[in-house]
Amino acid sequence: MEDTPSSGTAVPKGTVTQRAIERIKAMITDGSLEPGQRLPTERDLAVELGISRSSMREAIRALTVLGVLEARHGSGIYVTALKAGDLLETFGVVADLSRGPRLVELLQVRRILESTATALAAARITPEQLAVVEGHLAAMNATDDPEEILAHDLEFHRVIAEAAGNETMAAILEGLSSRTFRARVWRGYQEEGAFARTRREHAAIHRALAARDPEAARAAAAAHVGEVEEWLRGQVGP
Image (tube, rainbow, N blue to C red; front, side):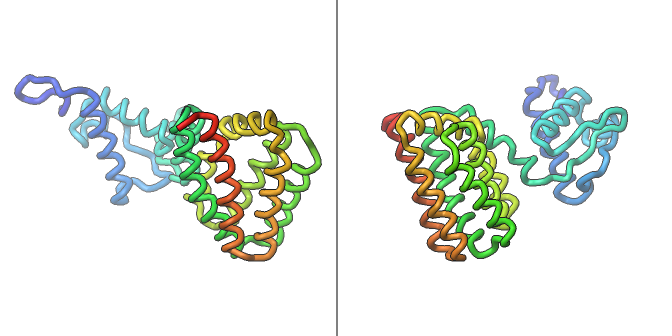
């Protein structure tokens, strides 16, 4: 087994586990394992790849956490559907746990992606999706409850990201726009009485979508996230 070379010097377990992870990923990439397919047993896979069962177990556990594999009780380990949303869930963890300047960096990324997604949505959004966006805007305007505003804000942007037609971009934005992170921003906005401003920004995004104007939509989304970015920069300092 690769864990114990012939020299007798033990290979660090993390290195062997990482090698096992890469081997399983390679099997998925080359089509040896397809989405939804059951993996060979842990024992057989360890023998096939020349890796100890303990290292193989750790590799499977790591890939399960990442959303690449899933354990089905009494059935075995399977490759997931490999959907972007499942594989990119860790973006939400990063957004939830980041602090200070790192949060500003995340908002910079979100500004770039959100403006692009909103521009794409302006060209692709269906009348039904536009009606849903308008409904969340109206609900935001009808309440001063931060929790309600937050919920409709999340859905407002989620529908727009879905309308852009790029599942991977939507999944990344979903993570970067985690509820925990957005709640921090809304609390700050409430303290500064900035709800009126953010409502105007959302209205500008909706107008651009309704006009089917990609460049106006891009500018409105960039301005909206940019305002949040500047506010946050003022909170965390240079």
